Structure formats: structure tokens, C-alpha cells
Image (cartoon, rainbow over all chains, first blue to last red; front, top):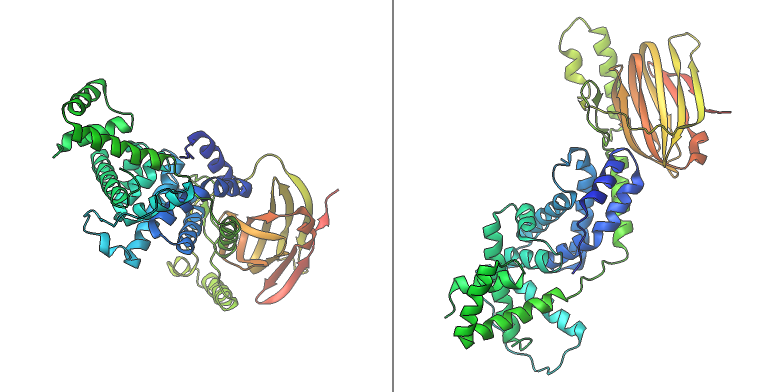
Length: 185
Length: 257
């Protein structure tokens, strides 16, 4: 789990950007490229598409930085842009139709008795990617990006109650998938 | 069948946000039913796995790709990044073609001639956006200047080149009695245009490409061009002025002492 949430540091960098310091923008890129790439990758399930999205996000941030309202935290703003771009992409791509019903996906257990950490990670990623986008998003934000319920509600633009409902359902589906594949009991 | 409310309590407990009362309620449910406890332990193991799953590193080419895209964007469509203040004007550059600039110049001249017709001017010039505040810090180092004076005395003023942090700033201040077209040429390999700010309303239309910024002006006023780049290229700046399409001035910076 990692976190990029540091509102004070972000506020300083944004002010420096607005004052014309291009190195401050570079610093924002270095700080956020990894988490945003990860978020986009989990949503698109494709490395090149994720890179396209993240590149587009930073160009959009560059274009809109002068209209950024510093009453809101920068990380919420840039995550929201990434989420919107990712959702737009997945809607366009229509790659998730088979999982749109929200029903659990049950797969046959694998035969592997033991798994390396890397293989386990792959199995978890595959399971996450089987979730429908709304559920996938909350799992990624909560467990990889360390977002609180309220922070997820802010960036997703939904009530906290909805976030909890999605998260709890997503975990249940993940548990079912991982159990069915013999990854967890 | 586990009650949905108990599953919610499990999730709250796993996330560490269950209240003491909710925690006690969950403990009671877990103690009462082995199936419920088994479900809870399984859910906790899944969350444990998620929490320890590493976030992958992005491809090495991502960062340069982003910076390159932003750089291209800054040249194609410089963004006003200074804080907004009332009482000034600013605008965003558009990558006009030479034809576009010529057309704008024609419109400008025509509009000057037709000053008695209200609405003509505003209908043809670039619409300024809101504002620009000061974009510069107090730390300035003047690298050179280009004094402007034309043979017929129709244009005067100066361009100064300053270093400001990592930015190079060209301040163009002109006074003209006739419509003129100005060009600030620069080394596009060493400098990239970040933004343009204008002072007053004398400058009406702009264009920019990778190696040049161009504008139209009548009266007294100026613009400030902010570049990202190295100070070595300051001496490569060339200021050109055209009147009715004919060159009337060309100057290079005299190094500051």
C-alpha cells in the first residue's frame, strides 16, 4: 500500500507551477505518475491504454491548473480526472460487458498447490479485473492507494454510504473468486 | 445465511473503523455461529492479501512521455498559469497559420480605418480571457535589451530579456502611431514558450510557433513572453517589426553589462 496524500507539499508545488516554475510541474509528474498509472492500468487492463490515459491526465492538469480550486486537495482533483478519463475509456472500449451484471464470477480452482508472491499477485490482479468497474475502482483506491471512505466518496462523487456498499460487495465478490480459484479458503 | 448487517460490521472491523459497540456486536455474532466466523476469517485473509499486494512500477518511458506531451502542449497552446486578478487581461495563444496572421493583420488595419463603426473591432480581434497577475519573482537578471526606433519615428520602445529562475522572460514595450506587426524569433531548440501576458490593450492578436511569437499592435503597451530554457540562447532572440507588411526594424539584443 502506498499513499501520495500530502496536501501541503502539493499546495506548494501547485503555487510554484502557477508562478511559472516548470520544475514544480515535473515534480508533480514524478509524484503522481506511479499511482495514476496503477489506477488507470487496473481500470483499462492494458499497459498502453493506461499510459495514454495518464499522459492525457497530465496534459489536462497542465491546461487546467490555473482554474484549479485550492479549496480542494490536489490529489483528489488529479485522481478525479484520472477516474473520469478511465471510466470514459472503459465505457468506450466496452470491454467489461461480461461482468456488468454484478454477479459473482465463479471459476474452477487451479491445480497449483503453492504460489510465489509474484504469481499470487497475478492471481489477485486477475480477480480484481473480473470485477465490474465501479467495484474495481473502490478496491484499488482502498487497498492500493490507501483512501478512506470519505476520500473515495470525494473523488468518485458519490455518497460515503454508496462507497461502503460498493466496497463491501466488491470484497465479497473477490473472496468468492479467490476461493473458487483455490487461492484462499 | 449471514445477515447483511453482520457482513457490514465485518468490513468496518477489517478497515479498523468499527466503533466499540459495533465491534462488540460483531464478536457476539462470530461467537454464535462458526459459519459466520469462517466467512469473517476468509474475508480478512482476502483483505490481507490485497493490502500486501505491491503497486507495480510504471514503464520507464512514461515520465519522459508525459513531460514531452506537456512540453508540446505548452508550445501549441500556452497556458495562463499566473494567478487571476481583476483589472488585467490575458488570453491563450492559438497556433495560427501565417495566413491567419495575415488575415488578422488585415482586419486590424481595416478596423483602425473603420474606427467610427462600433462593433467592428470587437468582432474581429482575439477575445481576451481573464487576466494575468504578476508571474515573476523579484529575482531578475537582465541578459540583454533591444532598443527600438524606426526611421520614420512611427514606433519606439524596447525589448528586454531577463532570467528569472528557470525561466527566460522577454518584455516587449512599444509605442506606435500606426498598426505594426511584431515578431520575436527565438531558438526553438533551447527555449519553449510557456505563456504570454499583455499589458494594456494595444496588442490585439497573436500567433506562435516553435521558433516565433507574433503579434499586432497599435498605440502604447506591450507583452511579456515567458519561456522555459537556458540563458545561453538569450542572444539568439531577434525582434522584427513590420508596417503594412514591410520590414521597418530588426534588432538583436545588446548584452547587459
